[in-house]
Image 1 (cartoon, rainbow, N blue to C red):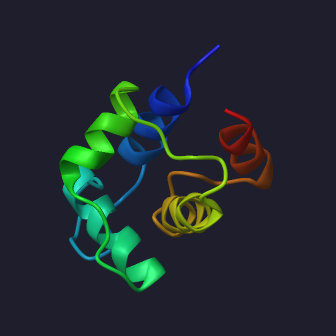
Image 2 (image 1 turned 90 degrees about the horizontal axis):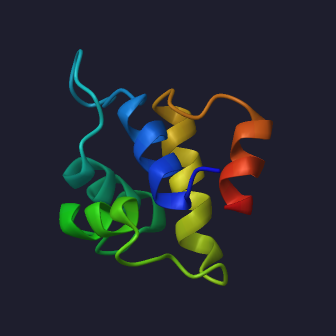
Length: 91
């Protein structure tokens, strides 16, 4: 079974950066988009890398971050279905 971090990485790598033509969504850009989505400072690319490697985790209680992640990954085309979103949250 894949971990949250591995699944996050797969969805991010399958996502297109809507602000940059023909480019995949980088860790740095995902961190910035999270800030825009949540209307705060966002996260660094290093924070996203730590999530992907499993070195740190997003708390299940931090729904705002989790929902923002799902929204961004969906808008960018990496997360396509409700079933994928549900599986991601279960991890």
